[in-house]
Amino acid sequence: MADKDLHYYEPKHGHGLRHDPFNAIIAPRPIGWISSRGARGNVNLAPYSFFNAFCYHPPIIGFSSTSKKDSVHNIEETGEFVWNLATMDLSRQMNATAAHVARDVSEFAIAGLTAVPCRLVNVPRVAESPVSFECRLSQIIQLQGADGEKAEAWLTLGEVVAVHIDKTFIKNGVYQTALTHPIVRAGRRGDYFEIRPDAMFEMARPD
Image (cartoon, rainbow, N blue to C red; front, side, top):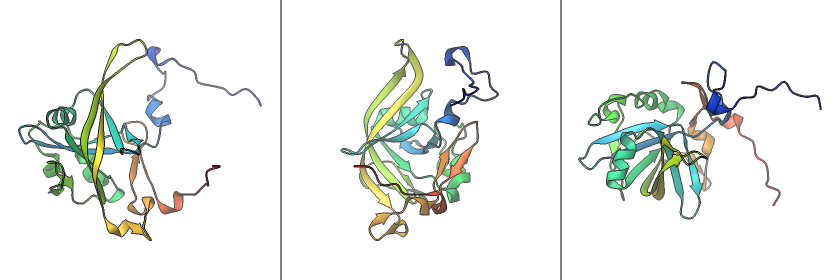
């Protein structure tokens, strides 16, 4: 194989490109559309691009916040949050909830979304979203580098204690991922992908 012409860099010295390629390479990434409530009752709804699932039993999801934002403060205070699935139909509303507003301002109102009560946690979910997870706080971890130096980033992990799924997207007992047309994060400041049924394929695992 011929040698590739590689762009090499060490992150601590900069990447030398117009945009940092890190979050464009680790893509697409699910969106952590997190609703939370603070101790004083203030409700927050915000999207996080560093989000994923980490464990089956118990089911654990988590998101990382660069700087300690309102969501993390709220969850630290009350120990609860909700993840809401961001879809193509809700993309503009999701983007609107990324606005930097005062802690006592509800992004539900800004985005024209309906906040409905959950069953096990005292945090509203997005009624328009086809899937929501009610979560109880497992851990909040301040991330650190290999040298042990603390980063301005907090990983919030929560156990999923209740799940809401629009039955429209369950066929023959199987949840149909692509039918909801979820959107996922790519690079730069505003790149996204839409997951569509025609973009999915199946591969049987070797075991």
